[in-house]
Image 1 (cartoon, rainbow, N blue to C red):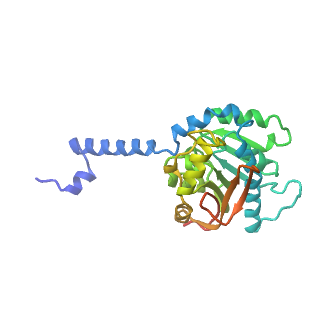
Image 2 (cartoon, one colour):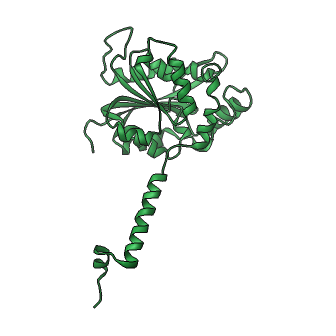
Image 3 (cartoon, helix red, strand yellow):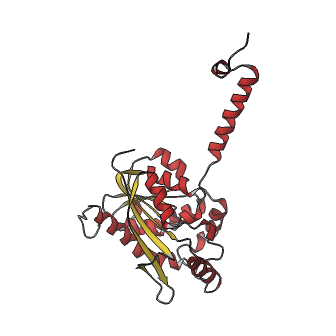
Length: 280
């Protein structure tokens, strides 16, 4: 008597069971192998750990603009600052890809409760050591060495704000990275992203000039192939339930050593989006 195909799959035995079992195991291995961690970039930035708080001048100069970006974005969504000296008091922020903690500390000084995560153990150690030097903010920052996939599984919908500044160009699977970052947000929460644009001008100014001519960025920091344009970030955010509120162009003046907003996104940009209050 012939056995139908449906019965073979309903009650697998012998060779059919082996094939199905092997197929499922392969799918499980593939799922586990998907990661946003770019090992090469993590190793590159880990080597900079010792100079993170001394020679990473561009990041330090960038901090005031980044902190103000978060404050202005929250104000535009209705958040009201209660205490002038601690304007973001009570706001829970996840700094995804926090590195050695430059931005995390800046946000904590506004009163925010900050969790900084990074895949580099060396950078997390530097961040932990540095924040202990300032008792005013050390109790408002928690640093964890972990990737975004593992962190989001344990912390879904717990944060008012997620910020990923100068990070998305250093990860694998940017779509997964953003999806997992969005999972951290409460409904109505805000995500802030700053990153270089994928333009010829950005390749010339951001890599050729900045890394190899005037040396304001360590050589090998950026790969133009990993840069992502704003419309692509918007698409991913939209597909994951986030509405873009604004996009600013960002420029750096190496003479004045100042970052400022620009009407052009040809070099770098900052993007603010808000998660829908009702899950899809």
